[in-house]
Image (spheres, rainbow, N blue to C red):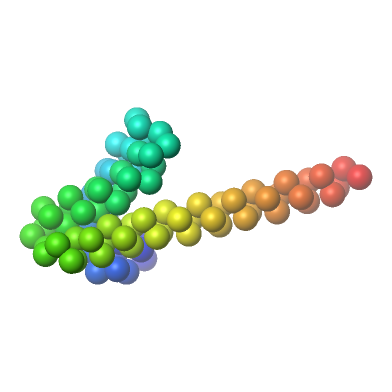
Length: 88
């Protein structure tokens, strides 16, 4: 289950988050962070949600991005360590 949906977002918020991420690819590095957040908010706006609900879905998208990035860095660091440990 996506973080956007877990924070009360609708399917429009999830799709907005995905589209925002794809649009953010053209504006690195800020686009990677702002794109999913803004996309989720715009998707929820399209769904007719209130401001508080829109912001909450956008926040869920942002937190999901941060958690996924942290996990990727952790796994990459572990692989890096194990690779060099095997060399020596």
